[in-house]
Image (cartoon, rainbow, N blue to C red; front, side, top):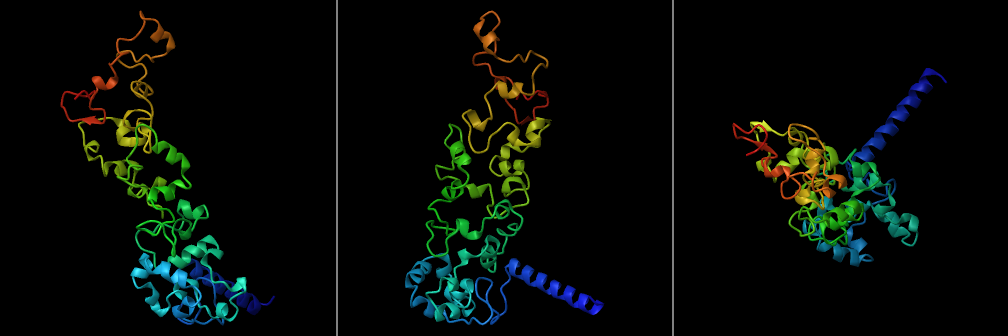
Length: 313
């Protein structure tokens, strides 16, 4: 291969890579150059009225959605073809399944690229590389363009939490435990803490850290405190289970054992309450009944009392 042939080959590869990146980025192509969805090449736009001659049921469903109410049909004067691409090839041979302009026939990343030609704002900023995107999900995994069940966000289920629970069944089970955040009561939703489209923080939470997420509601735990409890400063999840627990206040286990996991033998005896000590009345701790650690160390998250280094007030 000569240098001229090698140069032409490399330039050709570079152009192909640029085309692939442009397609994956979700940027719409110029008018007349096809669609990010299905068709390209010789296909031409035929207009939404033409689509509606056969798909009037889809048009009716779309009319009551956010897309329809925001004059979606006139978006860029393309209507249905804004997402589905120019439909002339489909019109010429409508019975040929290979020509059906269905977005769900695309690979997941290309499905999302179609949506992200418009929906690329703050909530979707971290979609690329997010946990959901990395696991092969796309926008239409959760959202329905034509037949949504929810009042907002065009979800495939009536309630946002039910959409999340279709995959996160372990979290559903935790919300039915005795102590839980009021998700199933409808007072908060999964989206109050998590951004399903991705975030820069762990667990796709909407804050910069777990503690900041908790402080958005539990501001009284933020401090600053004169006397701090180090586990609280580090991570609320050290002691609390965020989705549900069978112990009080979403604790991972009960008091006093949750304290004794760290405070085993310091100052006054931190003897664990086990079967041998509980069964022997002579050896049973005087803190066995109604004398939990919090009876004395009441300000467990931190204290501003100048004489309370042990979080007693």
